[in-house]
Image 1: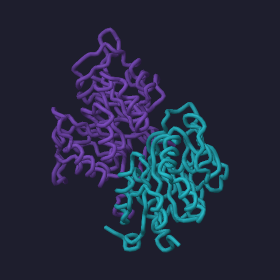
Image 2: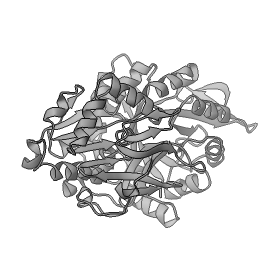
Image 3: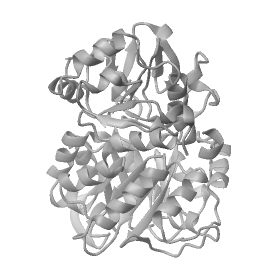
Image 4: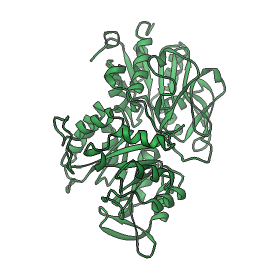
Length: 261
Length: 215
């Protein structure tokens, strides 16, 4: 049976992971590659790196990070942040990323989705959607890190990105993001029911129960979290055990590379 | 780290313009071999092991293989039962015909059709799925039955010869996960993205063929 995935997300600024991370066992807790290696070791299913560097003029830092990650981490990882052309995508994929994610650039120029899907295959095109449930109950797409309303309906947009070739949707709720009080279940469910591709729930993870809710009630195919893992208070395998106990199929076995090779 | 049995193996990873080449190269390096990436037909002559990776669509893959004049050399290589590992599209390309985006003739090394996954579930089939081993083979040394591997695909191989299917995964159908016939093996999942057990697949395959490579 296909398992549900837990995905860890790192925000990376100029090659360093931002948001406080306090792992004592790491030599350099700000190094995204060291963190990725640790999370892989601890049983994470997938990783996302979001480059939040203000200027995307210099891609070398990100390319270096992607290459070093591909050298050491043998689980899937996605890279996003400031990718605006299919050449930008190609650079990341050739450096070793398995998927790329686009958000604002896709809203500004939806053809970018089809171009990427045509050139590299839908399986590596993840469209990130930031959405907010407004006071009138409508669900609106936001861009520019959730700061700018677009007037676009989130469900209609989700369907469009799939029609254009997105292989997966990473859905972040602006209502719940950052509060660690649970994912936005109605939004997640509405989007997941509306599209044929997998949906990753994002925004609001505070504990294992939130992840269970996002999957059982929100019908998410994967759950993304950042902060709750970064402080070591919720070990990944503990979270997985709770999810499995709730009846969710999870990948529980995990071997160390050195033990198996 | 390098296993002395693997360090001298001539491993060729075929580059025909597919996307995930670097991941496959890094995985093969991690298990201790020193692969070469090649896109010319002559590279198959001296190879001990050939790996055909791939993501994307069957039509593009076949187009690229033809353009690089790799179709005949691959046929000759496989007809001689030399060690060959196909990964994802590298499995599907071996089939008779693919229905992805129309009807596309493939290499016709394995009889059967590449068909759309059944409706009713999210497509692509994306993530870690439990792989049930139907037959214990050296490819699974050190890998427990039911271990999970990472899949990303929308079409799967409906094999005419079920005895060649050594492992399956359930996704609304018994999805062909691993095929073996002679010294040909191929996986629908991505071993290079399936953690330690995935790397073990590469190691097992290379070790199995380290003693008796090219004629």
